[in-house]
Image (cartoon, rainbow, N blue to C red):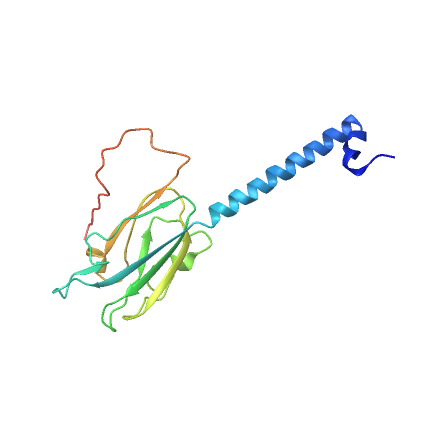
Length: 178
C-alpha cells in the first residue's frame, strides 16, 4: 500500500500525463472565469442632467456644458447612465447613443417612441448597456430640436488595440448638422 499524498507517484506515465493536463485545464479555466468576471464587473456610472442654459429659454444643455462631458470608457465596460430631465413638466427628453450596438439591451437606445418612452420633465431614466464596439461615438437628445445643443462625446477604448500613430492632444471634435 502507498500513502495518499504519494499516490500520484504510483500512477503510470499516461495516467500522470492525463492528470497533469486535467489539472492544467482546470487552472486555465478558473483563470479565464476570474478574468471574465473581473472584466464584466467594471461599471462606469455617469449622470447626465438635461436642462435649459442659465438665462436662456431655448438652449438646452447636458450638465450645463456645450458640448456635454466626455464619457471615456473601456471596451465591454458596463455603462450605467442616469439621465435626469430637469426641463419643465411638459417637455420630454431621451438620450440616444449614436452608433452604439445595443446588444441584448434594445430598450436603452434612446429613440423616442421607438425603443423607449421619453422621460417626462422632472423625472429620470437609467440606461444600462455594454460599451461595444470600440470607437468614437456621441450621445444626444433625441426629442424634437433638442439635439442642436444637447450632445456630447462618447469614447470607447480598446486597451488590446492601442493606436499606433502619434496623436496631437486636442480632445473630441463635435459637429452638428442642425
